[in-house]
Amino acid sequence: MRLEYVISEMGIGGAERVVVDLALDAVARGDELLLLGKAGRNDEHLAGTGVGRVSLPTGRTPLDLVRATGRTARATRRFRPDLIHAHNVKVTAVARFGSRLAGTRRPPLLTTYHGVPHEEVDAAARILRLADLVACVSADLMEQLADRGLAPERLAVVPNGVPDPEPTTAETMRALDAELGLGPDAPVVSVVGRLVPQKAHDRFLRAARIVHESVPEARFLIVGDGELRGPTEALAAELGLADVVTFTGIRGDATTIIARSDLLVFSSDWEGLSIAALEALARGVPVVSTAVEGTRELLSEGAGVVVPHDEEALAAAIVECLADPERRAELGATGRRIHRERFSTAHMAAAYRTLYERLLDD
Image (tube, rainbow, N blue to C red; front, top):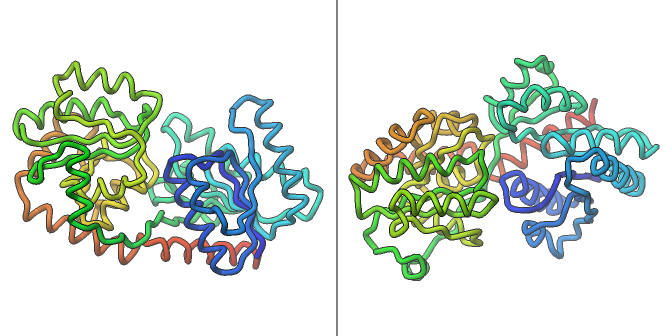
């Protein structure tokens, strides 16, 4: 099978991780694969695999979109894919119009919808009508699109997946503790994600201040980077948390930090289906999250706690979980089971393969 993947960029993010895992699966199956998108850190996982690469402009201006569409058209004309798989909204339009301009037979277009801010859902739904089939990473997201008139037969749910975790040695944990200044018995509460408005790190920090009053020995790790790092660091200092909050930046060992954590927390305004949350489940780390799409659904079977978009509620759930090791163990065991049964990379790849075959048979 000749597959063309299209994504805005291959930087740090959940959609990019999904593309890497699907690309590796496709290569293992013997498929020919061309990946279109701006280069980024996740490209290193595809080095030496034989995956073809074409860079695309990533801006949102009309000129950027025209350039991206033209480049996609040229790449599609040369590669002649059997199927195009786009990830998220903007590149759905780029992939559709690019394939039309290519002048060859029009390959079917599958788009994975990873979610957008609530105020952008209406516009996203209009663009996603260009796809032959839209795979939503959660049932919540599929409901968003169905409510806006997308036909049920053109919608599917394919949850994200993550690989089975590799064992983490005690030596690795000791080295991490030493690097981050963590006591071996210190409760660790982490948040993993880009420092952008969506993630609402300010809500997390205000919750952390409340937690600190009840559990002064707790330490808080903010893993990631982004446009709001400066203001977020300033807020931590303003709240008197400079000594208990560590900003790690982007880490290649983020999964090890998750494994070291007693809780992984999400304070987000919205989500699709977080890869970090799935990594936590796979490692038996409970999740405490605001009631956002995807994560709310993920935790419904008892792998974590869902709370309102409120710092007091978030703090109360964190304190309760830290005070109850037996409950954390139960939540963690449920998470491992759910990952094994429904959210592995193998499950995700097999589900997409079924959709590929369905589109090619139509």
